[in-house]
Length: 182
View (cartoon, rainbow, N blue to C red):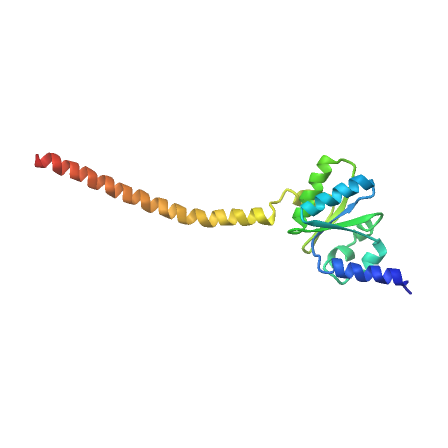
């Protein structure tokens, strides 16, 4: 029978993490209090959140939530072992992975990537590094907008070039008639 504290934690995890479907899982145990404060401040700037969880309670509480693919995957024993922090928010796992790899580049040996979840796909450490190289949602939207704008611009340039050629032809004809009329 679970004690009341564990029940409260499970309820908190369900409320906080119940709708999360994309995350990067890290081990923040190597961070001292100063680095942890800096890490959390940088997370807030990036519009991300980290929830440090008790593994057994999280596994039990999240087995029917958005993180179900990660919790029920065979790698869950590895991912949910030791100190576990779930980074989520912003536009999903890609933003969390970009933040994590950027942090690790600037602060070696401070956190350890354990894995992650992107949609239905469970990621290992290498998968998290690989998705950090993908364009973010905002970058993809700007690329799509540029593509949509490029087509009308090309059409306009083609019409403009055609009109310019007709104008040159009329100017040449006018000059020829002017010379012939003199």
